Length: 141
Image (cartoon, rainbow, N blue to C red):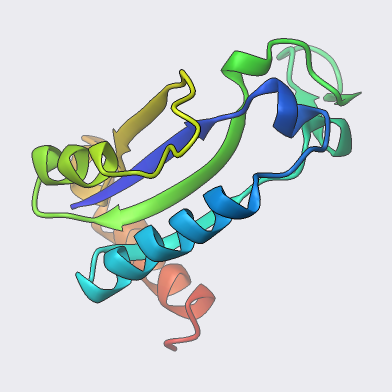
């Protein structure tokens, strides 16, 4: 099973103040453990929302673009991992080990990545096309 681990942003990150050297070092070690265990598929930190945009769909008008920054810092994604784990509990155990050298309060969300079999209206043709596209985007086809 694949899981998206969503790390919430904070005021420092939104202000463009990157992580401390200590946190970067600890995160590199943690990422190395994830790689050695074979569970890390992807992971990145994100730039502040001031560099981002949202596209808002109303359903009746043309999509509207809203430039960042966005106000609700605690609701913003600051970074992510995609982990391959046998179940949710294994993923939780990994994330409980995530470095937090400053002992700061925060929240990390774990969500299972939906598979084609999760969608009741998925036709075999669309499932095959999705598989082909995934392989092409990964450089496998």
